[in-house]
Image (cartoon, rainbow, N blue to C red; front, side, top):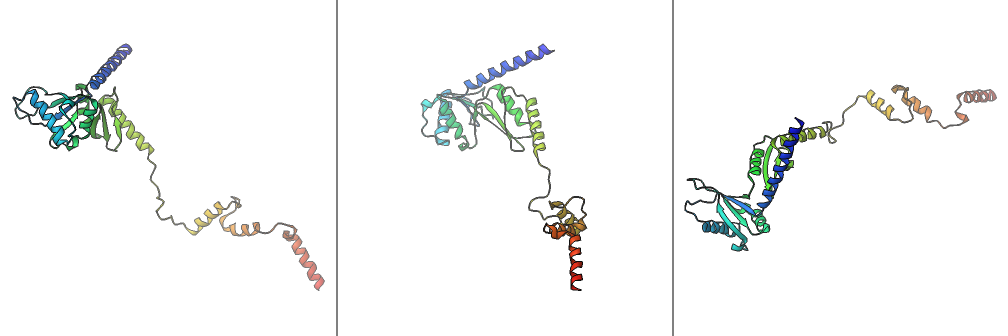
Length: 248
């Protein structure tokens, strides 16, 4: 069982690397969807259609026929269906420029030329419950979840691993949320007079904890007397009796 699992992992890694290599070889390719098809359309006409779209509809007037290597339709002609067009550009920079301005094309779609494996995974990611947007950049799939978090699909990812990542991120987000409490702009909680006096006695640093709240004032008066011999109550009463005897 362990050997079989290891072999499956090795096969998955090999397939993943092969898919990455194939995707890299397509970096200069772009697909055009929704361009009106013609049963008798020749390769030269397809090439001209792509050139006109880039110059006129995308307003990339600096493009010339030398920037496009070739262009052709995908698959056999079918009535009421417009076949996609694959255009291969002479440089990756030219392909990137077309992709950067693709939103200017109305009624048609311009997209990267994805491999069959990447394209299949792209469609499955779009069908996931907690996904609201999916796109690709240089053959890599990205998606945004319902919490507006952007995640990157890794080379070895499957739908199962992506579901686990989404679930784990949702749990992490929930655990990081602080419990709701009193807002700093809310009104302070009103306390009774007894609670207030108890709170004040607790905050007073010189008051021992065993002193009751209703004796705090008297205790503080005693503590506020200046230190010295004249604060001894016995000496004070004896001196007072002597003064009365002398006066008498």
